[in-house]
Length: 392
Image 1 (tube, rainbow, N blue to C red):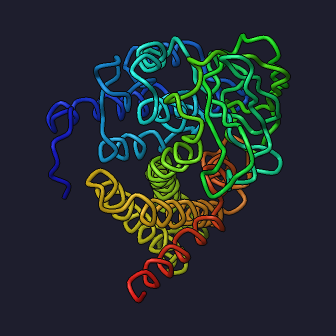
Image 2 (tube, rainbow, N blue to C red; image 1 turned 180 degrees about the vertical axis):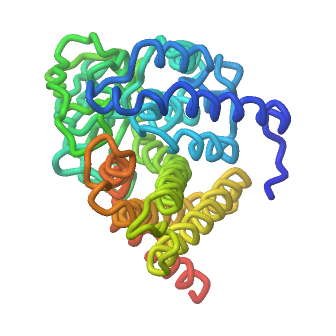
């Protein structure tokens, strides 16, 4: 088990995790159908999440967050994954891919300006990377940032941007020049959502994860000052994106484990209580086999997510393990949810039955923050390249 020195001691973290679990089980789960049918997180749940510090649980304490490290983050993710994934999405970008860009690459002035508001939930930060031609691979980025006096002018379109409709800050990736041997030519900018030239489209109609909102964002001649360039470095964008995504992939693995655990628990309950011909369906060996496959996947995924988090925190592996964990755990969640629907039979295909929602919700997990195919390329290619370096 990880034995580092996190900012939050184990006993304090145990209390935090207990509060998160209680919030999920007693406040959120009873309202999952409401969240699904209204396609929104109720305002009182948002307020309670902010009061609990969930908008900044992974933001360092010096900027107003709880200061959880990634090992602890994974445990929180597993707790949050147990209910509607849209709840976590509400504050996921603040703690994850958007907030971590500032934590890891921002200047002291930029952190002081933005992180306290992000940690409190007063500001929702959106990670504006994905484009029609650049999703899992930022190298295809087409949005541009051109020098304009001391500042920059940003033009381009982004899609599938989480929390775009509520954002107070866009963390925008743009190309300052063509890639060359000298660097990628990708920078990242902090752009207030009320800056002239920003157009946010209507929220996307999605297969699942009702209550989480994504939308297209267009930047047309958006002018920003020099203070908006993250780290004051026009080449930091690609590294910031890759680092933030790698960390986020481990969080995503934990989230998938939580969702799979819920699908398993729903399956076991149904198998033990539903009958066929007067016999509990859980007494049938083929149903038991499906439950066994679910349990095996959940146990393996939990162990992998925890180990990947440990390797990331210690610095032993911040590339291969995150992708392997994200790949396995999200694929596993999909299989577990599919088996849950099968175990439920016709009931599992009905709206308002939890496993039907889980089945739709987890499908996205194999797509965002890097598709399963991209994870396979990272893992396989990375191992082969490492071996070639050893042999050369």
